Length: 392
Image 1 (tube, rainbow, N blue to C red):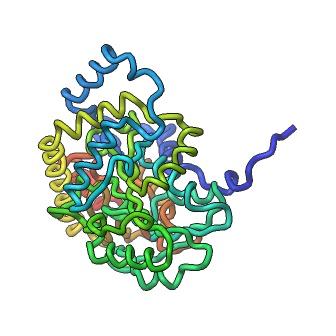
Image 2: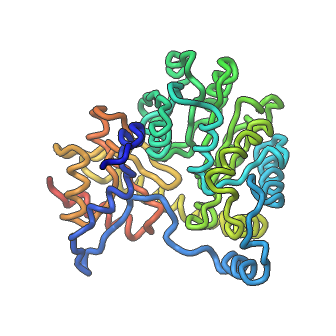
Image 3: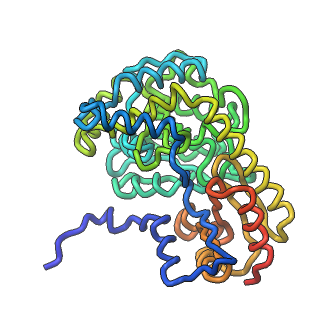
């Protein structure tokens, strides 16, 4: 007997990072040419010692850290986010307008669940973040591709033409995954005005905000006293404090929506990790200078990538920033085949552009994503050298 399978799950593509890891099976990497893994944007080192000590102290000395907590997160962390974000964005955010989640992916899933049901539509700029597309597919929500042109910046006028009575939201990621580009403040304002006029949500995923190359606030949307009901902001503590395994993310939205979100969160996780939240709170209160140093290192790696690609024959850098470079390759092979051969022949694991484009979009076959934040400047030089030497 074969048990039934939800057709929306069956139709959803396999997790791209897990699929790419399977390309490593049976491949040996000699000591003189170790694997350069640029497939996933995640810190590969432990948090700084002070944060680890805070986690250890909480694990040993706070019995409540091992129990269920509030569904929407620890009040102290919600208040800290509200306070710091109000200052950073020049607006007013209340603690009850912040929810803590088990990572930013769960934040996205939560928000979509409160906004859309099967048959509804959500606009995603392409190339898109694949987990966003996967969740929409699994929910039967239509992911409407919003093409981006040179510079990988979406156009609000093109988005306006795609909105239908079934549209529930526009999703923007800045700095972008997979493209790395930082959306101009005026672009975000135009999308916000469009969403507000059309009565839909603007979901702004700012997972990589701590690594924006610009100084000051990346936008002024929270300064609008009427942001509630239109703007929904997502964030991840994983990248700033190296807390990927602890799964701590955040939603900033109007309190009425978070009250509805609590229903979903109570069913899927009951509460976010207590220890992870304790670590995130300690980080917010103690690691601002350390995070600034992490940002400087990421910007140095970004510079190395840009300079390296400028010397790489035939390759074209389409976007570069935060943790990512998104590039067009010069080889006759489609990018999925190219990616597999790079693993076997030169020891590079990256993701093909087909994982970030609608099925059948020919642009994906010419593109790759490189998560360069995982490697230092020296390995970036070795990456560029291997790509330059490789012949398809």
